[in-house]
Length: 118
Image 1 (tube, one colour):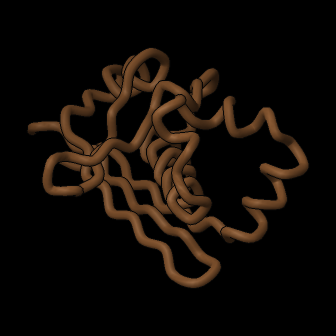
Image 2 (spheres, rainbow, N blue to C red; image 1 turned 180 degrees about the vertical axis):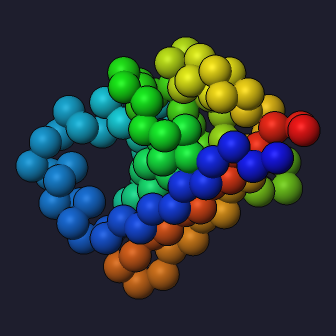
């Protein structure tokens, strides 16, 4: 059963400008393992985190570092949660995350489906 769906689109140039204007944003949004990634990858990961928040109904108090995108051995991206995001997911019964990310030109996108067994 689908618990929630979230979709987000990030304009890479606008995201870059935000990071340049507010350097602390990089540390607030991303865990250390994510921070050295190329800008387009960061934008796609931010889109994924936004999509997770939307899939959960945008819970108050969500810590961005409690949600990250990791890649498996085949290079496929997956959502990894803990802390405040894991708590919000547990409250909704989320057991599985499905993630699709892409970037092309100046756009980065992500779609997330939160699912639980019926």
